Amino acid sequence: MELSVIQLFFNASWVVKTIMLILLLASILSWYLIFYKKLHVRRAKKQATQFEERFWKGRDLKALFSHINSQDHKPNGMEVIFDAGYNEFMRLCKTAIAPMDLIAGAQRQMQIALQREIDQLELHLSTLATIGSISPYIGLFGTVWGIMHSFRSLADVQQATLQMVAPGISEALVATAMGLFAAIPAVIAYNHYATQVERLINRYDMFLDEFTSVLQRQVHKDI
Image 1 (tube, rainbow, N blue to C red):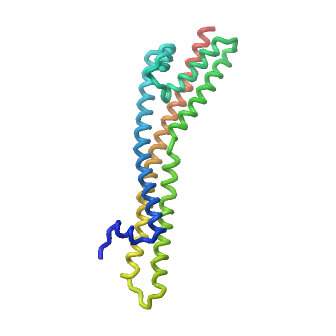
Image 2 (image 1 turned 60 degrees about the vertical axis):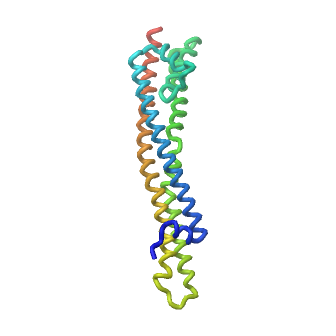
Image 3 (image 1 turned 60 degrees about the horizontal axis):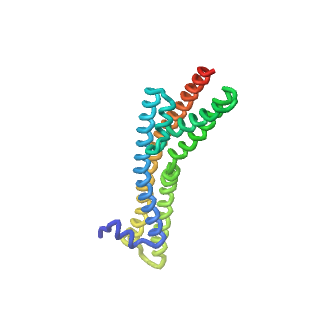
């Protein structure tokens, strides 16, 4: 008799059922995070490109700073780094401070802002990595438990046949399949988005260095 996955689920022991439900929830969460990170990374890349174009095209730092801090605009990504650095730069310019200390102060604020943006970019990546690494083991545990349960039920049987153990083993193997179904997309997505995030972080870090150079030239010009 051919058994469907749903029939196998309902015929499984409560332990295997629990494991299957956990893996199903892990798979749903994984796909939700995959689409979330896709939109998040795509938006971050688009915002970084747009800001770089405005920054290098206009070169009017005060106008760009005013635009970023306008009421109808919320800073994102590189804008946050620029905003933190330029705001600190302007504040320190009003004090009697050495040029090198002025640049160092602005750079510290940009480093803090950069770390916050990195935390946002890396958000939920660890969850995808966790799902990808533990799901196969959870499914394997369900398989081992299901097979043990199937063979234990044959203890009082004098003559065992394949038909007697096949349904139980099939139920157990579904747990392994579900574990792989949850893990494989999560691992692929984690590797993909980790690479994309690393590239964005490199762009942010490069902009920080370039903006620091711009501020240094500004200081020397004003001296």
